[in-house]
Image (cartoon, rainbow, N blue to C red):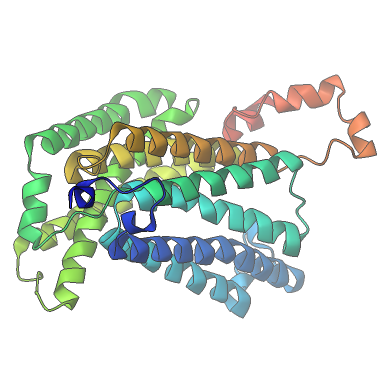
Length: 345
């Protein structure tokens, strides 16, 4: 009898609730769709560019290309699946799994587009898979929510209100004080706003997703004003996040933006979820440390993928000719904003 109260063993399948399994499946399918969408859209862009003005040159012929639209629809399906995943599983489980879309995109680019994957990029893929698997095995159970009012109570507890207040104050300070002075030279300014606002946005997405799940199960939550407050907060956060992410991508190298944004956004989202939904309240210290180690493993894999995606195998004979001083000077400009590079020419 006493054994029934013992925590389940390491990796015991019984630890994974049915809701976590649904959230896991939705998160993985989301990564599949989103990762594939990049390749499909790029194929569409290549096909459109072969018969018209390329998008990079200001052309819009890709809008008439069915393959490009297929990629867009695939991405939308992936985002919907990701939204639904937050209704079933905690952010500690769902958010880090976004790294799988990077693996899928890199693997498909290697096979379909001929963009060779460096050996260290392959190691990065393995690290992401290992980290994701570990998080799946040790993720906390989804908190049982009975109504949107309960979600509102969680969102208005002192701890989360303090976090939200700190986020708002930090965002205002960055936008007013730092971006005008350092936005064009320090990537952390734009990415900081995206990540801070995004962590609140994910909490709203998760709250709205749970409200819709309850509504579809027969308990209408659309009658409560709290549901619409969550919807407004979500829309505001998404708009702000996308605005400053576009600024970051327009100013800095994408290979620099992506890993930094992933690290900051995922880390802050996990912190926000732990505060609001108390994801770690029912877990042991060993489980929490294991999840953190798995998260660091995913971050390491993501870093390797982005850092080596433009490299070729060191065994290639052409590599012997790639180390003159001129190349080293170019590599030193990796972190310099694109606009500043143009002025240096």
